Image (cartoon, rainbow, N blue to C red; front, top):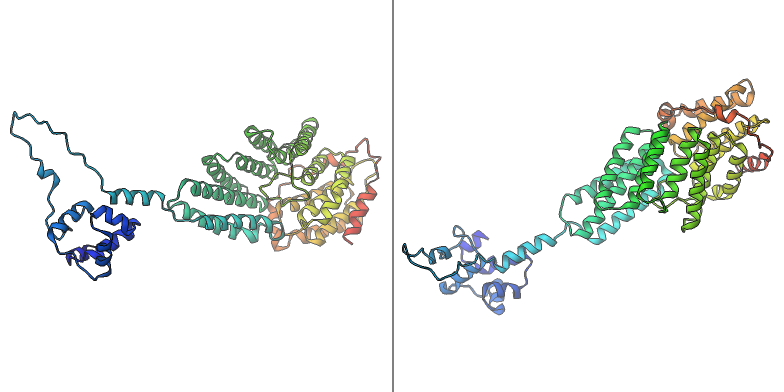
Length: 458
């Protein structure tokens, strides 16, 4: 632009100014005082502006700095010299008005954005895609994609956006960090999981997304649970419930957060109250049917709530209740694509079969071996940990061939590259001594449920 002005090429200078400030020729005409038709001829190069009487007012209106202007531009301050001492001035100070071009530049900078609604929609689909693929591919395969997505969102956040688009980016960033936190839990990376959750919570609080904050606290509770910090798991779940105890997200906080941790702590009344609260909330809200992805931002469906209830009663050594809950969700589990859910429910049933006055050790070990032979889906901490707990519960029958065979299969499975690190990090903080104790009401027939599970996987 400086070169164009030096050459008195005002057509090029006007065109550059319009491009920078996103002005139409009509706007430029209003700024300069030149007609639109004259501006058009200047910009096309068919005419040139050479009249000094026209050039100087145009330079003044555009606010061209003196060191860039091709002609001396009168200084407005010099036109109003101070009066002689003692003189009384009746003139008001001349205001320093901005030019329309300055206002247009500021407006353009304020409303400009480095991202458009279409890109936001694509990023939202990227988050949904990670959720949909998670149980089939697992944390180790998907974490790099999630990191790339999170970093791309961060690059956009460091630019400029209008408020609605910026809020959408904050939500996407919080979701991506939350997904990475959940993946780190499943990968046995406790410290990394907590760091991601802290980041996700801070971002969600910036946009006051209460639902997402509750989901994040549920993930922190899950992290504490698998690290063996059951008191802390309850505290994180309670923190989420304080946001809104009647929200659909509270179903997960009650069943997956409070109930399971309280069961590990041996608090039977507290665990059962939490399960009852989750079931009551499920009846009050429209929850998803079937088994949603474990990492989904949706509220828990009834099938996941009942699966967690079964796990709670494993810790409480209540075999009949475990088998009752497993029977209720058996068909949904078998029809789902969730290898993790299938593995975890079968391991819970197998552990329950070790309880009561007539433990079915042979059948429990068969179910456990079937989980190991099927692989249990992509390796995650919960499956590795629960498979180890099953053997801990059967250790007093270690001389039985079925138990020795399960132990051999477990060692082989844990030594595989994909599960070795998880097997090392899984903390068997509470082996299943509780499950070994007999349940008084062990009169239900576990054979139907366990036989059905066996038939499904022969």
